[in-house]
Image 1 (cartoon, rainbow, N blue to C red):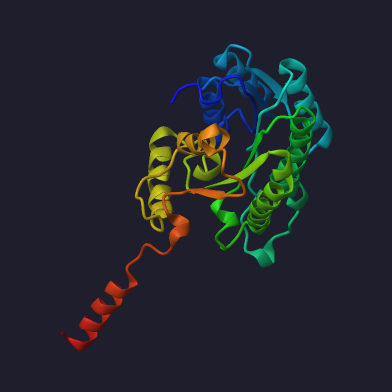
Image 2: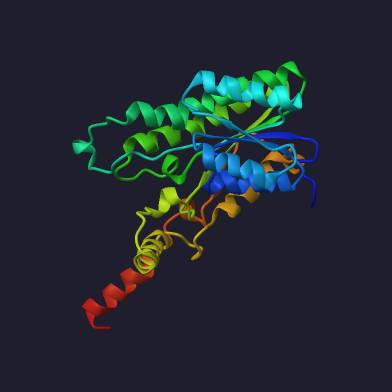
Length: 279
């Protein structure tokens, strides 16, 4: 389908790179007037120019209520309405120590960006939608780390788990205004955040990517590493009228990682049994 967001205004936080950039590009291609929000001014301005038309950039630190207030006001001042709020911005922990050695010194920053940011973004966008009588859409970007328990990055995991629960609760609370709230749960998507890029020489970078891919795919049923455009397509669907009866969902975009263990343990058990019994 073409023009799925025609006539609509969409804000994308964390919009200058990765999933945010892919989503902003797709939303614009589908007819939306896009406001790119990010702390990276150079990349954000460049993307707004690339999108052309009425696209614009608004420097935004989502952990700042004042910044998010200015972001929503910018969208309303320029376009007169707000139909889609994609709270995509997120950061990882600064380091990945064993929990007992974690200083938690980045706790406030990670919570501020990953949880407070989407919460205040949801609130302010929903107020604008309600006041203008717009049955809008709010989409939050979580992670499989918020669904599956695991080691390290405890603050990150806690914020993403909180974001999933918040999104469901907000969907219930805002339904009376006709506002839909959903949540994406990406996993193993090829972005700078998940690829541990360190500026290595090309050959070293390729070797690192290959090694990391093998680890990621070891617990993923679909043996294909996802890319930002995969998540953007899911975002487009949830923000479009095709999903007009969908709210309160946490949609995994992760090749089946959260579905269960892809290893055939029964086969391994039977092979071990045969070896031991000599049969």
